[in-house]
Image 1 (cartoon, rainbow, N blue to C red):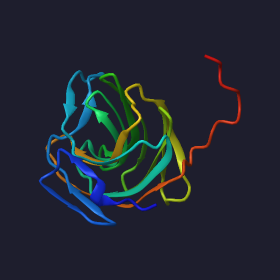
Image 2: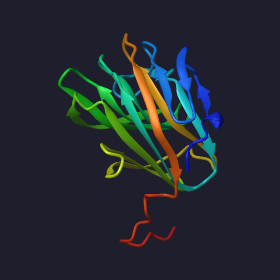
Image 3: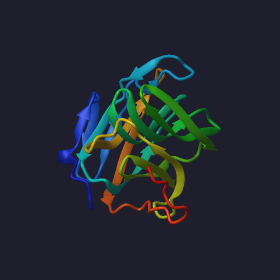
Length: 202
C-alpha cells in the first residue's frame, strides 16, 4: 500500500521542504540531530521528522532515500519517534570522502546506542525497511529495493498501542544538503515469526 503523504505530520518542520504524493524532499538545516547522552554526554533532539501513526502491531514500512551528503554526520533515513527519550533510526551518515556509516541508533529511556558498518562514500541511495512485531522491531537495508539485509533487532520499552514512524534527515554540524524520499509503502510484516526455539513461558 502506498503512503498517503497528506496524513503524515511534521515534528519540527524544516524551513525548506516539499511533500508530494510520491516524493518528499528535505533541505537540512545546520546543527540538527537526534542523539541522547551516551558517550558524547549531550542531548540533541531537533531533527525534522515527517511521520504517520498506526496501531497496527504487525507491518513493514519501506522507503528509498537519495542524498547529497557532504559534511560529517549529514544523514537521512527511516525513523520511529515516540518521544525525545524513546526512538530508533537507521540512516547512511557521511563520514569523509572515502566512507559513510550505514547504521542504526536505538534510544530507550533517554540513552542512545549506535551500531554501524562502513560503506563506500560513492553510495548515494539506500532502501530501508522497518518492521514491527508487537513491541519488537527489525531494521533492514537494501541497495536495490529487492534484496534486504538485517541491520538490527530491538525491543522498544516506550511503545504504546499507537506508534509514529516515517522519515528524517539532518546535519549535525554546520552543513546543509538535500535528501529525497521515494518508494514509500506499507505492507504485511516481512519480518516473519521466529521458527526455532519456542518462547519461554512467563
